[in-house]
Image (cartoon, helix red, strand yellow):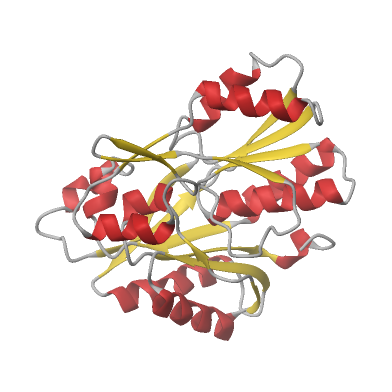
Length: 286
């Protein structure tokens, strides 16, 4: 079995080293120029251009690109597990499903993670680890469902400008103008595949620390958690959140991930967020 995901998955350096994961790039568009995320444009270049005032757009991979990838992979192994960002936030999964109908030699199974960034990354990583361990497809799908059910993804936004311009959370539009100084705390509803507003603060520091308070409402103090903080050019904020979580829970930290262009286009520079789930889900694989 082969694992496919998309470039909305934010991996830390070395996180998936030695694992067989095929990453299909989404597109980032500045003006009339289109870049393949993670291939034609790196994170530093992306944020430099964003900081200069250029407003990017993002786009899903084409059906044809998925066809090419599935066809090539089917020559190695006809069983493919394709894991993608929320279908409520992107048409990537729809494009992948359409492509699979054009590659009859491949048996493609799909999984909608319901989220973005480290949520997609964890699902792809754990699927690849399970494949390497020899797990059958149904057992891997059960694991992915457990991860989606138990995982919590939360992040703060230092500005509303990009996420409102991107149209990902239209209900926030009413906050623009008189409340431009607020720092929203957002979360993923992984069942619905949507982004929801959890709260708001008026300083970046308080918005970062408030994430730990929301997490503590779900997990009792001392809970053993697998944790990965992600940020967009805010390592100090990432460290602040890690220290706070370390004081509350028994944390197994993965190296921090850098938020890539797919989410960064809608959140901008300075985001700090975290993905976490009970450690016992990953026993034998993490």
